[in-house]
Amino acid sequence: MLPTGPRDHPAVQLLRWIRDPLRLMDDVHARYGDVFTMQTPGKRFVVMCHPDAVKEVFALGSKAAHAGKANIVLRPFLGTHSLLLLDGPEHMRQRKMMLPAFHGERMHSYGEAMIRLANDSIDKWPVGERFAVHPRLQSITLEVIIRTVFGIEQGPRFARLTDLLARALEIAAQPLLMLPAFQIDLGPWSPWGRFRRLSKLAGDVLRDEIRRGRAQGTEGRADILAMLLEARDERGRPLSEDEVQDELVTLLVAGHETTATAIAWALGWVWREPSRAAQVRDEVAAAEGDPRRIAQLEGLDAVVRESLRLVPVIPMVGRVLQEETRVAGLDLPAGTPVAVSIYLLHRHPELYPDPRTFRPERFSSFKPAPWEWIPFGGGPRRCIGAAFALYEMKMVLACVLTRIDARPASDSMKPVRRAVTLTPAGGLPIVVTARRSRVLARAS
Image (cartoon, rainbow, N blue to C red; front, side, top):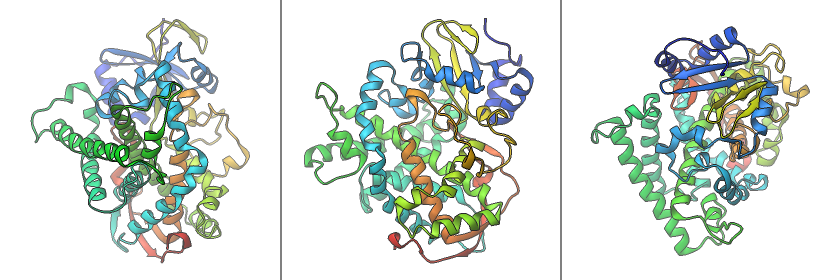
């Protein structure tokens, strides 16, 4: 028997989840506690947020619980070979092949490109005018992905792929397109029709890059595509063209929208406290533009962690039980979807006193366990690009906070859904009050 939960009609619960998932989680948690059952049309799933329960869920082995099945809604966007959709031995095979591309030392080779692209964008931000900063951050993270993941330098190929991907991803951000009922191709003027056609054009460009890499070789290249083309499994087999393409799309989707949104949230919190913004700016300036030193800055790291705690970009991760399993004192039958609420865990008072307040300094004394701070999920399914995302957040934040002074142009920090992510309302409108020259020497 599943735990109790809201009795609203499943369609009502789905609508609330789409419109305001955080308020829904707060309301249901206040009434039913740390474990409850939610319902959407055709599905019932158990939600957990107590740290002990989260630890148990993440400790479940690949035979007991499948994460790929919980992510099935993403298949039309990522493809059947995406790491996020795989389970069992095939997931482990591809994960092992991809891991070397995200080794910590490799991050530093991307740092200067991240700083340069961020500075190029900041040069064009208007001063004294209200504008939404989130779209500017999306442009930065998209260009970073194309440069570091695909290895494409600026030029015609770079511009074409950037344009195609930006237009396709903007359409895919519409929350209703996550529902199969709205994934209907009614021609090039319908949202799903436009998305499919743009995705096909972008996919053709990606396949050209894959074939170009295989034909010309990857010697001297340090981009992630090159490493995927070089990767071999334990039997000496490479990734197929379809596998490489789906993993590239996954890295693009998971590493573009989510990272831009995470940076926007961090800026929104920091700019509301001018003294904190000044403190972080001084800390970054002392790093003298060295990506390695920026990555190690304690104050900047705390800002990143606290922002990801307060409003995780993705509020929930899930598993589908493959056998009867006891979790959080409950005997749950096989086939039960179990969701971990990242949002509620990150605001659990047992872990985080005064949980609704932005307090980066809490991380100077509190070192959370791997199941207590989980913006990238946890266990063996923790996001493979977590180190990349954290590194990129720090490089872009270092540039923005060093180069400009800004104030929020709205008092609202209400989350708004974009596909599976939660972004600041209005794209985080700001007014830049001052812009400085490029003070990060290595980006000059």
